[in-house]
Amino acid sequence: MAVDVDLTTIWAFIIAFAVFAYVVMDGFDLGIGILFPFLEVGTERDRAMNSIAPVWDGNETWLVLGGGGLFAAFPLAYAVILPATYPLIIAMLLGLVFRGVAFEYRWRDPRHRRLWDWAFTGGSLVAATAQGMTLGALLQGITVVDRAYAGSWFDWLTPYTLLTGLGTAAGYALLGGTWLVWKLDGAYQAHARRLARLAAWATLMLMGAVSLYNLLLNAEYASRWLTTPEIWFAAPVPILTGLVALALLRALAVERHSKPFWLSIALFFLGMAGLGVTMWPYVVPPSITIWDAAAPERSQWFMLIGVAITMPLILAYTVWAYWVFRGKVGDEGYH
Image 1: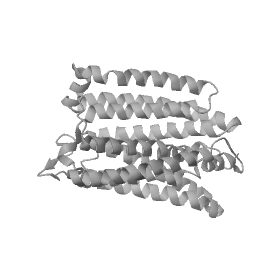
Image 2: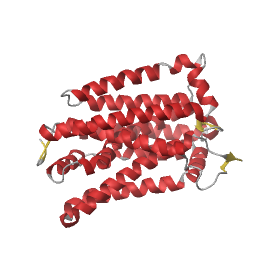
Image 3: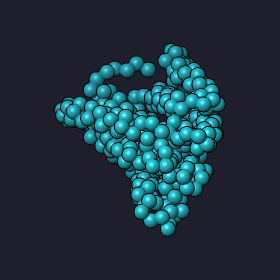
Image 4: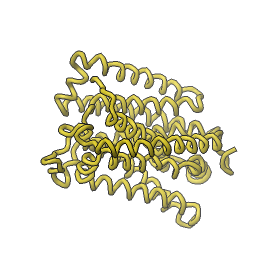
């Protein structure tokens, strides 16, 4: 599990950070959409929508950075992964479109608000599940011949990818539920806490199922988690995951406001760390490493300069937006 830090490794961590930022920030937006049918029609749904209204579109900046960074820094990986997952990528993008359109139109077309609410839920669920299945398709391995995708149109559709899709949707529901616990108050907060508790149990069970499935999926994955000396690098991840899970369930059992959300983020971070242990150094398992897929060094340096300028700006306006719209959400928005 040794990590040699070079320009290609730096770019791998930049893209991993962008993906993590997207999963966390757009994850709770999508999670609220997934939970929407369980929220009371009227004030509760309106408050849930108002809680993400100022930030939801900015959260998708990280998706552009992650996808664009993959294309620019690892063009071979981009050229292999997309043909292998075209149906999932198309479904994800259509889901995000429906989610965005429904978000705007439910306010401007109140006569059909029920329709737009279902579009919001459907788009969120499709986008979340497609993202999880894309990850599963990557982990289970992609057939590559002569540096090109050589599989069929439906190689991505397996029981494993369905499991990862359900796990991602449950995880996003957990993020959405804990976000509402933070942003709502009174009876609405209590309801959000109950939903978040159910989502937490579903997420933990599905994380466990995916982790066990990984050990059966690939002998190399199993060796990284179960043999020495790799096990000494990997062991802290499940141990910390268990501790965070216990803290999360405890925080949801009592009246905590922001703590469950931060613990949910920690759970996702540890999940991503486990993903890194499983995949490193492959960007397209089982055949293409990050160095095989990397762009020329001069191109990486050129893009690194651009990222060094733009990423601090993105982080700054993101932090500022969340700071401005801090606090609880009432009937008229943030107060």
